[in-house]
Structures are given as C-alpha cells and as structure tokens.
Image 1 (tube, rainbow, N blue to C red):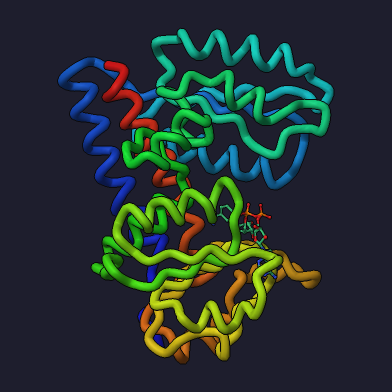
Image 2 (cartoon, rainbow, N blue to C red):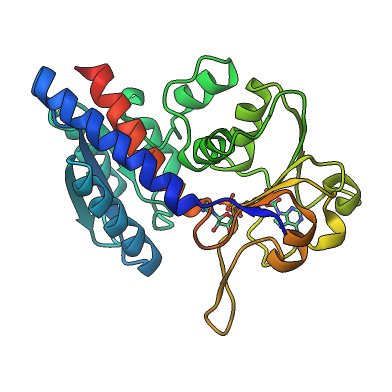
Amino acid sequence: MAVIIDGTKVSQDVRDEIRKEALRLKADAGVVPGLAVILVGDDPASHIYVARKEKACTEVGFLSREYKFPGDTREAQLLDIIAELNVDTAIHGILVQLPLPQHINPDSVINAIDPKKDVDGFHPLNVGRLLTGNPFHTSCTPSGILELLDRYEIDIRGREAVIVGRSNIVGKPLALLLLARHATVTVCHTRTRNLPEVTRRAEILVAAAGSPEMITGDMVRGGAVVIDVGINRLPGGKLVGDVAFDQVGEKASHITPVPGGVGPMTIAMLLKNTLHAANDLT
Ligand code: NAD
C-alpha cells in the first residue's frame, strides 16, 4: 500500500510557520497581514469556503474582512469596492470567491484587483509572471501540491508528470510549476485520445478533472506518485476524489486522500500568499 500523503498535517505545519512569521512581522514592522474576502450571492459551497478562509486567517493572527453582497449586485458596485480595497493599507490580499453570478464577468473583476494584492494568483499579470518564470502570487491549489511533494521529499526534476485537467485554476498553473521544476509535463483533457495510455506513463500523476473516481488502477504505473485534486459529492452524500483510492493505492508509491489531501493545502497557501503580500507591501 502506498504512503498516504497527509495534507491536513502538512497544512497545519505550514500554518504554524505562518503564524510565527506573522508575529515577527507585527513585532518588527507593526504590520498585521489583512485579507478581504468578497462573496456575492448565496451559493452554499462558497459560503462554507469563505467561512473556512476567515477562520484560518484569524487562527494565524491575520486581519480578516468579509464583504457579502446579494446575488443581484451590479458589477460596477463590486469594482468600486475593489478599487477601495486596492488602496486600503490595512488590506494586503483581496479574494473574490468564485463562481460569480452569471451577470458579472469574472475576468473584469479579477483584472480590477491590484496584482500585488491578488492572493489567488488569478490576475493575468500573475499568470504571465508564472509563465515567464518570475512568479509573484501563484494560484493556491497548484502551489499547495508542490508544497506536498516537497515536504514528502518527492523528486520532481526530470520526472514524467501527467496532469488530467487543464483549467486556469489548477491544471495549467500546475503544469507551469512542474515545468519550472524540470518535470516533463503532459496535460490531458476531455479530448485526449487514449487517456489510460498517457496516464500510465506518469511517475507523478495529478487528477484534476472533477470526475468521481475516474482514475482506476489500470491507468496507473506501478510506483507512481498520485495526487488527487478532485472533490466530488456522490448522490448518497459521500465525498470522493477523481482517483479510485483503494485500487490506485495498491499500485502507487504515494497517494493523497480525499478529503485530507490537497484540499487543506489550498487555504494554507492562501495564507502564505497573504503573508507574502504583506511583506512586499510593507
Ligand atoms: P474544471 O471543470 O474547470 O476543469 C476540469 C478539467 O478536467 C477540464 O480541463 C476538462 O477538460 C478535464 N476533464 C474533465 N473530465 C475529464 C475526463 N473524463 N477525461 C479527461 N479530462 C477531463 O475543474 P477545476 O476547477 O480545475 O477542478 C477540478 C476538480 O478539482 C473539481 O473536482 C474541483 O472541485 C476540484 N478542486 C479542488 C480544489 C482543492 O482545493 N482541493 C481546488 C480547486 C478545484
């Protein structure tokens, strides 16, 4: 059976380090890192995520401010708030919880955030910096995956990495991060032909498709490191990843569980980006 990568434990370690660094920043420069989270509408999952982010902020000694708006809020109103937060010296990170209601263009909203305060790493400037090998804020889930690999001392250099999923928030930025660490990277998607043939090449396999347990044992090379980003709720209510955990766990050298793998790392990296922003803006 594979080593189970404990994201909850690693996330706690990262948060402990952040708490200490935040104390130091307060003592040395009198600065408390501040995160503003903007939530529009009443998507229940978004409300849960935002509550978790707030709690995590408070636990590491950050200032956390929440801005909740009804679902019919106009885009212009949102842009006004962002403009205010961009110049608010108590706020170092601004996060707009996605998805936004249909009538609001997420690109316009993300583009309005000062890239220095874009702790989600979604602003085109931050994406471009990652692409050109000069990253500033990097998207949280992909950087959380790198943190897991590093803390388990998993070699990336020269290894064959396959990512299933090409979204802007997971697959694409992760491909760039792995490439920067000298992996040979393949990105798969719904039009990829003969997916199992490709995934079987992977020494590091990342599943970020949002398709319950689609990665089965026969799709995995023996000894592979398998990272499961997927979060899928089955009709009975059970939470599963994109990887058939038991089957794949028999073949892999390392595997992340769902829940308790990649998920907890995302918030830890959001805190890390906020601390980075506070240091940079101080
Ligand atoms: P998305 O829907 O934006 O993108 C999914 C990608 O997977 C697409 O590029 C699509 O082409 C590909 N894909 C889907 N089904 C496929 C299939 N059968 N074969 C090959 N490729 C396929 O999703 P996303 O936002 O990147 O999220 C992916 C999953 O990760 C979701 O389950 C989401 O809930 C989860 N997620 C988890 C975290 C976390 O913190 N753990 C963060 C973000 C997303």
